[in-house]
Length: 152
Image (tube, rainbow, N blue to C red):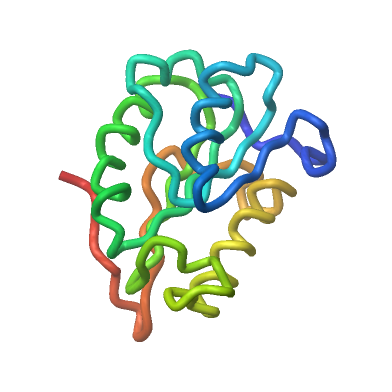
């Protein structure tokens, strides 16, 4: 299993995109062999038959209420689990697509801040273990209640 390597931030082979470009980020991960790490904000999943071509560590940011895109995550999770690539797909509770866009009506400062901090933690390898978890992480909402599960 790959690990998030220290010092990935600043490399030209590091990709972060959000909104419309989340899907492009996933496509780049399946096609650019030199890519080292990538973070997709609510991007639709790539063709699952292309997932084995991903070599970069991947971090995905998804919204609980965005069923159109987040609903495909179990298949993507399973495809990533079948590889050795380091990956983490995180679903943020109580928010919809574009919750990170501070110019729109769906902006949620609390979850946007959490998503950004999680993205930087992956990028900088500052997580407790120094690498991404190989599963779907569900952020806990207010009071510690889980937002829900994509397991199934």
